[in-house]
Image 1: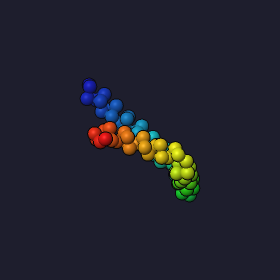
Image 2: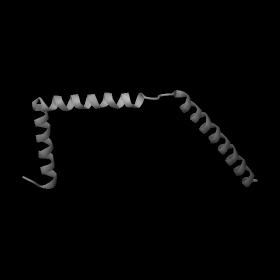
Image 3: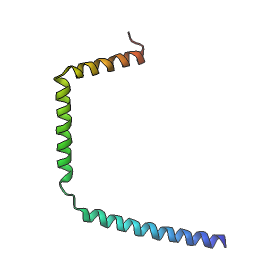
Image 4: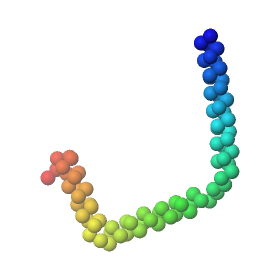
Length: 79
């Protein structure tokens, strides 16, 4: 009796997962986001470059570097 219930539950779960997987794959194919990835990468790259340039042109970058150096020295036992 328990074996039959387990078998039925397993079959129902497999059917549900199979249906879900096919539905999800169809939705992903329908999105058609071609080319969007490259534009997003360019935008993120421009943002990172702008932040790095801002840090290099101010004393904030030097103070951050100094804080990292001090923290590393404390961890490795430097002076």
